Image (tube, rainbow, N blue to C red; front, side):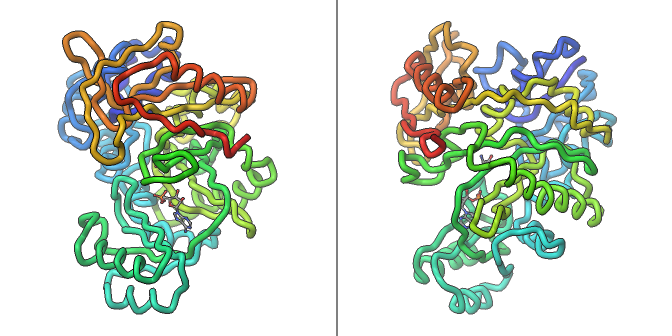
Length: 417
Ligand code: AMP
Ligand code: GLY
């Protein structure tokens, strides 16, 4: 069987590693991929958003199944186009991907179907947004409606900051067209949990819970990044909270999407905040999380391809989704300076003993050597019987990976211990 995976980061490397365990899969292409995954998949230089080229490639190369994981191709309709060309796909169609592509849509969906989330209002008129803002108290959260590389969320501590955020998103279009519409939202507090789930539109099966670390510096200081490390499971997500989340959030969401004529198939990722009033939705993502996937999939004991195919075919069975009760930790090694300016092109060396624990996000080949080619360069995985052991192993393993200007947080998972 020949597979095609669309994307290029650590998430895609983790997915490809897991898919490769299936002996029936004889070939994986990745579009465009990165050099660090080229032992498992053939990198094809077609951009993740070039849907026409993807369809052409899939047809010419008799691809049996495609896995679409980044948000932009999903929002642009990659799954619709591939499916129309006869290629079965993992991932939601364009209509269902709106749950991530428009925060206003997601908030209105939650409001209409009584799914717990922060109070909010949606505006496409700046004067009305500013007038509403003046009736609120700070801190307050301002979000660009559309996809903004995960950066379209501003938490304003003061009214001056809040006004500045509204003007910068709506008038200056600091996030481009993503900011035509904004959501102004109540500020919530509590531990954050990521729950990735498989769903075929009717049945939903959660994966093991996880915790991301979005800020660049130790102690959750510094700028927001694409994620500096993850752990799984997330100890704040108790069986009781899992039961409440399933009943009040997960199932109501897939039923709501079905009722709206947008049945969701693929991985629906719930970003939750555990408030004193119970779990509430911070946001939905229509895809696997990065770097959550890097800790979740290594704990999966069943076959990923089987489960993916079941979500496509509408035959998902809970018994096919099994996780170990161990723990995993992924520490991101980034280029010094990320998420701001950084240098790249430095040679990466990895000791053989940890080769299988390295998940590449931004690497390239140069003269037969692997070099750094991004802000987030790679993730280093540690597995253990519990979180303490997994975290210690992940940090031990980072000692065996070197490149110039490497930077990692030293406190991944410490909140969880
Ligand atoms: P997002 O890009 O939507 O994941 O938001 C980025 C981060 O902003 C989240 O991980 C939260 O830490 C924070 N955030 C988003 N919405 C809220 C909210 N309503 N209250 C408090 N924090 C929030
Ligand atoms: N880990 C956050 C995200 O994938 O959006």
